[in-house]
Image (cartoon, rainbow, N blue to C red; front, side, top):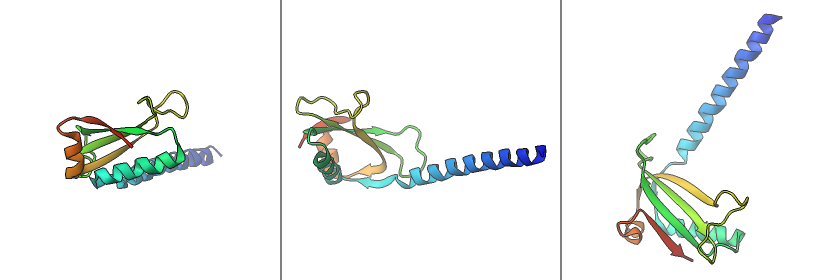
Length: 123
């Protein structure tokens, strides 16, 4: 009987480890080779359809100092702003945003940033 409990515990640990590994694989598959400014604007416009408070977004492109693969050199953070340029929050605590890992960005996004790490874009 104790052996059976031990097997169940080992199986539970195995399942936990397996699901963690699968989650990591799926997460890494979402890393992008290229992110374009047009994609970022398109995403913002789609989100605006869901939440009419969105009037602008902040885009921040940062170097990833701990890349997990070749498509993890940059981290892009896109946050949404209301008409007063305040972050939009669904729960009153965390800003509505997304994070994208990528290898590189297109020239249009590079030009928009114009040497800065972060820019605000009105929709």
